[in-house]
Image (cartoon, rainbow, N blue to C red; front, side, top):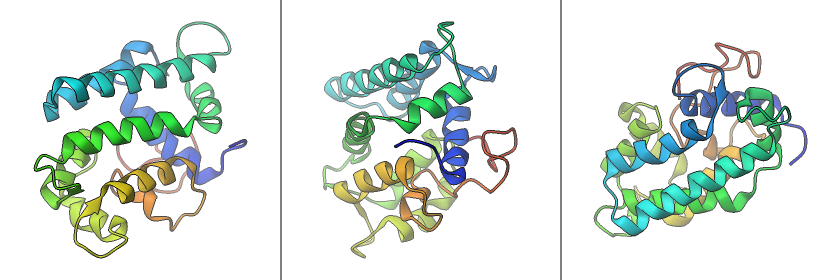
Length: 190
């Protein structure tokens, strides 16, 4: 991906804040693996999906650890941004796929408003934003988010530099403009 655009840095600042559970400004393996625990604790997926979610988060940490330039087993925001600039799309897709299958509680192959609201809550957004998110991510107008729409939106979130891209909404209202990577560069802890 190369150098990150200001929009990408703002989105990453929100994801970084979500992962940095102790708020110390760095990510550790425990921080990243805690995301898998939060997802599994809140959504109660079957054992096979729990393994997939944990494996995808472990893969994410392995990728982030490669960007740990000072070797302190902690990833600061700049190291995180460096890792994100070369983020393997497969990791995003594998985690998104497992989360989608977990959220799709009725097995319909799509996420209805109530199912998507749970994702927003788990990822730090507000379930009250569900209608606005669905309106932007429902590309085919069915009133639900199909698997391919969800996967495309998740990937778009991490790679798009277009401020109007629908994928910017995958976790709720997009981050407000501000100094990229600086405190306050997102309008809430995502």
